[in-house]
Amino acid sequence: MSTGSSAAAPNDLAAYWMPFTANRAFKAAPRMIARAKDMHYFTPEGRAVLDGVAGLWCCNAGHQRDEIVAAIQAQASELDFAPPFQFGHPKAFALATRIADLAPGDLDHVFFTNSGSEAVDTALKIALAFHNIRGEGARQRLIGRERGYHGVGFGGISVGGIVSNRKFFGGLLTGVDHLPHTYDRAHQGFSRGEPEWGAHLADELERIVALHDASTIAAVIIEPMAGSTGVLPPPKGYLQRLRAICDRHGILLIFDEVISGFGRLGFAFAAERYGVLPDMICFAKGVTSGTVPMGGVLVRKGLHDTFMRGPDHAIELFHGYTYSAHPLACAAGLATLDLYARENLFARALGLEDTFGDALQALADLPHVLDIRTIGLVAAIDLAPIEGSPGLRGFKAVDHAFHKADILLRATGDTLVATPPLIISQAQIGELAEKMAAVIRAVA
Image (cartoon, rainbow, N blue to C red; front, side):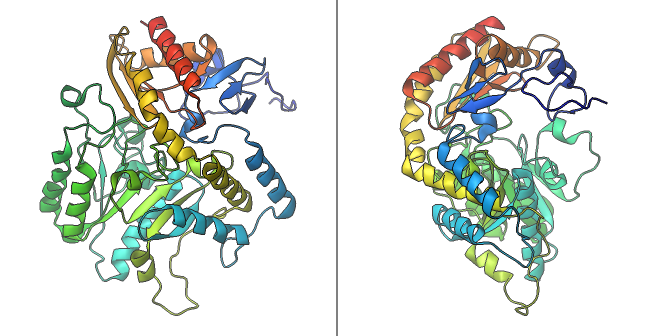
């Protein structure tokens, strides 16, 4: 066992089993990051790498923003930890109020978690408990969607629809069904914003209701924009139809906005962009601009108040996490929301949507490009797979991007994804597109 001290360039990579990573390939040619500032990461050798993915969809305000760093440092010197069960600290209540103020409608209450995965499992448990305490305990079925990503908890992978995330882990939760995904290249290819075709796919929920009966269904959970699967914007009218069907049958609608929340689509939440009010919103990532782990669930007032009916001294929901509303996370969240507001970053992202879309859609004629989808400050480029080796072209692209093109990209299979921080300049949008073009040519 190695016992050396930590360093910017470690000499032993064996002990760390990396998540969602081809570990052997990585350790043969590491993509190592030592520091970051604003729009760039820096390797241990000091080489600047343009952050094309906001860390992991999360560093919406960019990196090492002075205000957020100072808030975290000050909080660490004042209060390191406060027990979240039966006790509270002021910043937890302040941040919950700020987030609720950003949310549309009567999404007035916040239950804090530490990640998007925990937020999803929390929302699913709230949905089941809600129906139980209303005397409709038979409503236990949960409906997800094909190609959906809802984190890696057992609840999240059960309602999720990405095959590789599910197939190794047994039977998962029982009583789960899935809507079809919303993507059809023949009807939606090279779309900008919400595609015209596909609203009718929401009507598949009526078929699922007819199969199982509404009296057995607790909730539907979807990403307004499916992100991790390769960026699938909702067809025009799809979310509205889904909301109407849920209302008709007394089914709760949950939006997983772990990716789309906090400005990625030009609004605090995608629910606002689409004018659809879900019963719960799951959030994480951008709430602290990726600086300290935090997630949560926004809950509508009526749903929350249903739980507040027993004796005053009784616990209303037997659920929570040791680090819910951690003081450092709350301090980071408050500073992050201040920064979003002061720099008007959500509106800024919306204002850059066309420029970003123009730059990325211009790559359509490059070799092996099958489709490009752009919305907000998000783009996905589908590349043709290498025959017999699906995912290899995408892997090579990410590797080439980091080592040779000085840009950090993501790949989902053979789909390249760009989701830069909201502080990106117009010149950097051009630079990002040029670098992506060079990467695509390199793996042709």
